[in-house]
Amino acid sequence: MAIQENSKPDLESPLLPSSENGNIEHNEKQNNNKECQGSDVSGEITAELYKQVQLAGPLVVVSLLQYSLQIVSVMFIGHLDELSLSSASMASSFTTVTGFSFMLGMGSALETLCGQAYGAKQYYMLGIHMQRAMLVLLLMGIPISIIWVFTGSIFKLCGQDIEISTQAGIYACWLIPSIFPYGVLQCQLRFLQTQNSVKPLMIITCLTSIVHVVLCWALVFGFGFGSKGAALAIAISYWLNVVGVALISSSHLLVKRHGLVSLRRV
Image (cartoon, rainbow, N blue to C red; front, side):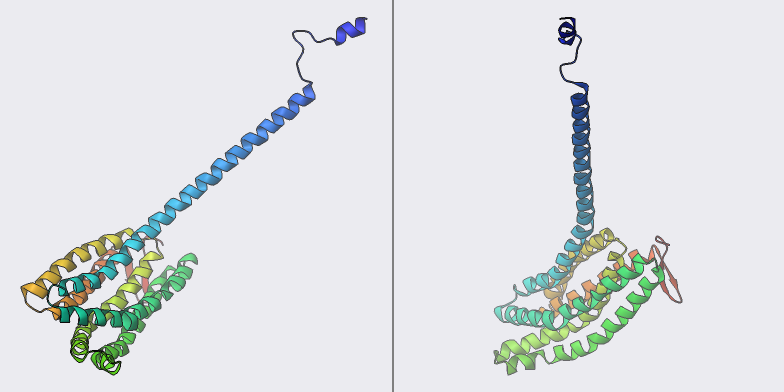
């Protein structure tokens, strides 16, 4: 009877055995650890997403604004007459496929070359790759220019309207000065992109786009150049963009005999 009375629970005895209490505490710790790990993973994903947006957002804006230069010029030409609008639209499509897209594709090779050099901390190679790419793209602008000279003849061979083809050929010829700064600009963009310096690019491109609108109005209507002025405005805007990006680069770059070395990253 005494043993049975001692085995009965009293007010101070635990409701569950000690072994079960230990298992519950262990399970609670595991659950807490899982919650902490889950919060850490979500925090890492959020931080990585923020970094990607910071890098990709300005690049998207830069690409859209660069492409908008040609669209704005065609919009101003549309206020002249239907013939000018038709010829400029055809010439813009032709030059984009045969020239600007070609330069864009060749310039994108710097993403791999400069990315490897930057990852290996061979910063002097960044400038060397950029300078070589600039030289190659400038040389490639020569055969592209020759093709653009015969734009009108190519359209006529394809059976297009003679008058529209003639005006399209004239517009394409006035676009020739824009192919060279466009190639240089693509090299500059890839050079700074690999160093995560994209916000200054966005600022310069935005300013250039605003200036381009003023240039189009001045050359198309102010000086009366018509569609020729719209094409010339594209070349001037691209050169302004090149100069602006070069000034940004020179603020933290040192020119040496073997190339450009980023002082910020050394």
